[in-house]
Amino acid sequence: MAATNVPVITLTPAEMDDRRLAVENTIGTLRIENLEPDEITKGILCRYAQGEIPLDEMSRLIHEYTASIL
Image 1 (tube, helix red, strand yellow):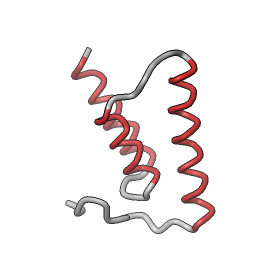
Image 2 (cartoon, rainbow, N blue to C red):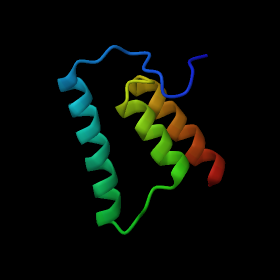
Image 3 (cartoon, rainbow, N blue to C red):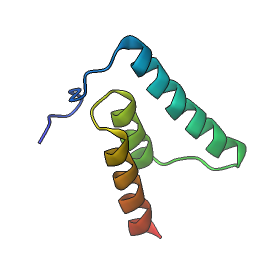
């Protein structure tokens, strides 16, 4: 298991910017709908943006988390 805050995916600066922008847009879209992601959701998104987890892992974690709270 990877340590916290350690990138496991090598990303170029442009890829990091793309991920950061995607996460910011996702959070912005939620806020437009008057929804605010909780800290766990933000943490998962942050891990993705920093290259700690790939897209499929982020999607799985978000899905599992939201299923557990509904």
